[in-house]
Image (cartoon, rainbow, N blue to C red; front, side):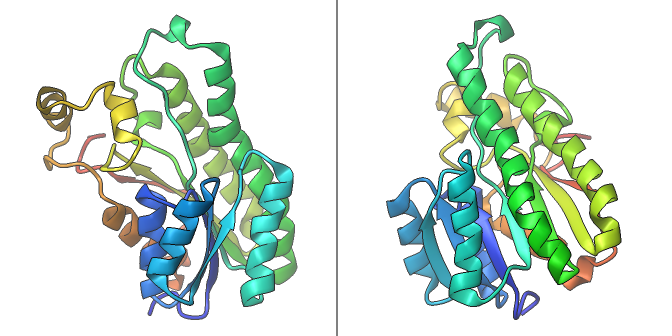
Length: 248
């Protein structure tokens, strides 16, 4: 029960890594707002986790939705201790000059602007409470870029730098900020990163991961639980790889 008494908001928690993080948090004693733009997915996750999970439909690129999901933590559970910025999108592998502008704008909105909006809404609450934890889900793409994914890589590099800068600025207020860098996992985004999901493509992708498997939602949940718990009270500004050795 490492998160007993904690109240968290996890974005993009209707599936994939977000759902895994939410499940681990509830198992460790937290009460969790499951935020996702897909209402049905958020509700399925919340229902599977019981009374300590509450679903909220939210588009993290919209300020009003961001405020509403954070308000839900206060209204439903009475506070906010942890914010996990997990929602993210990618693009199909392609030459960097070929990505349509509207897709680029969407990547910036979901992977970058959403963290800015969430910080603007959450940080004043954490400052008033004299503490809090923010966890940003970045990617190994921000550390060891794969070709033909340039704009996704760049967005995750931004997340890592923002995490470190936030950590330095917010430390005097008792607010810790960290990031996780997963390698591609068994989530809805996997096919996006690989371009196509065939045994041959999977084998080639897995050959770059020394431990020989993809990240799982459980892997991310375990790492997120540690970084958001009091056990990590001296850890801030790190971008921890959960990648089976991919970035070595």
